[in-house]
Image (cartoon, rainbow, N blue to C red; front, side, top):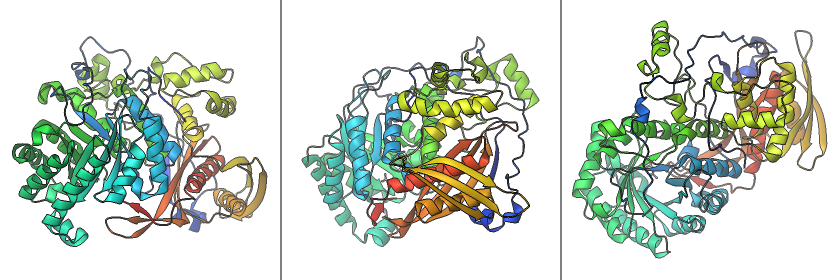
Length: 621
Ligand code: KIV
């Protein structure tokens, strides 16, 4: 287990002064003369931000609705008509984002965190797509689908596996999820004219029969909970939708999910679609209606909320809104919209999410997927609670509710000036552990042992250790894939005189040391080439970026890279095209070359975790 959240999770202040230097790797490595050897890291300008602490007497809007107990889980029924189930598909649809490949260990860590967050259903993957996916879903079903996390009041999430409407996929999904206390199979087939004609090459009658018989087949395996999705429902003929949905209800479906697969519908249209399905589908009162909104027009959150207002009681979302193309409805936005406004404008809707775990979950997904969120992202962006303008700061100092519609503490964001523990070079393991707990990371055992010397070395070189520094170290040390290659030492020479040279010592999984040196167009290029000489794994560097996490010359630098190997391909089920898997990596250190090497090794280790996969995996859209 990499990191988990304390029962009282709190998180640090925003990254107020982050400076990011991003360049395409190709440009960077082919034009060395444009890049200074030390990347010319600009010193970040400190910016004045109001950091609120104790709230004034006026209650924040978010506290108006106190959370109610979660109703008992019955697949096709919810005893409280106002309760909205949250179905998280970060590990399935989210992982379909380009470059978001996650290892089994990372998926398990995220699933555990989602259980703590209190999601009702975790869609853990698409078991038929590869052996690795099948094993990951099985592991999550066993490990996360049978225990209630500390502080979760006995709640155990449903573990769901996706399958197309065929027996092989359904068998694989069942093989993976059956170990969970509450297993679910989610099966789908396209229903729109355009998909029938061009993708499936089937008639409506054939699709209807496939859907009906495959839902019945899934139930016949002993699965008590079967979700059905008419893919591209947003562009499907209404009468056909009512008919097929009515048939799958008769065949035993417990949840009907309505995907706007291409994210084309606007708010009113999606709300009307759900209302029409509710009004016209035979047997609809015996099942739960769900939404699945893609974000192609930036409307996924609004449409999901519209769906809930029209009667949907399951909303499919991902952490940070990651997913195919422009992504999915984001969990944090949908959940906080319901929390902030459910009472006032949604007739009292509520969810079972413990919103104080949102920030840490978001951070974890950001690190494991390598997909970074923009500073102005709603709820979890670095600036989401920042107030720079004078008028806003004045208002905030007088009363927080002038410019904040929710309290940062509601999502687990603690301003650092409120936290009691200040770390320095004399701080010990206990202080570090306590501070990390305060930031929301429950790190112990070997992970703490590995982190501590890294912390000490930063503390010896840096006057003030900030929360951002610690978070960068946690990201680098803890959210890492299985280690095949570890950095021993790296030494570079660079500058205007002569070639940049790097000597790198790596340690393999058996503890054996390997040393190589190489020249390059800059110190990072030289170091990466030396690594390639040791590992002999052909890699293509697709993206490289470096950021300083705090202001000052002694800032920790975080490097992120995206690489592609030459072997792992996957077939996209929609287009049938062979796609290469890409792998992200993150590194953090005060030395930018060390940080860069750590990131490269992180991505390489992730790639090596996938070595045993089939050449022809299948990804779905
Ligand atoms: O976008 C979509 O239609 C899907 C379905 C499989 C639910 O992801």
